[in-house]
Image (cartoon, rainbow, N blue to C red; front, side, top):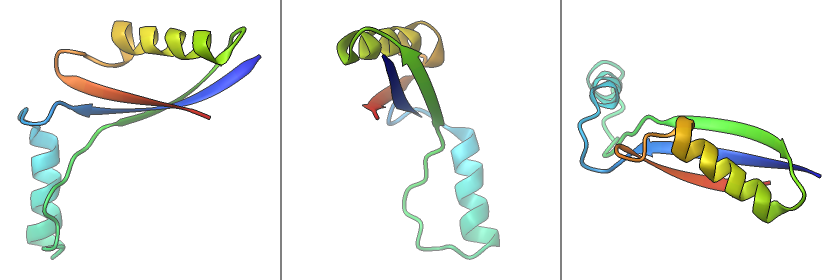
Length: 82
């Protein structure tokens, strides 16, 4: 059976994220979006797997995240099964 999942990956809070800092600064200073208090850039991944059940599908996707898609030392991820 096919299962689809959405994966959102963000840096751990408190880690330096120069790309997000630069984008936030441009949004505020250049484009006048001064209402922004927090800005975080991350990764959004959609994956579809063919597994026997949803539990094994989610376990497989978690392994993908742990082994390649996310860096568990620096990033958190959430998986939403669809």
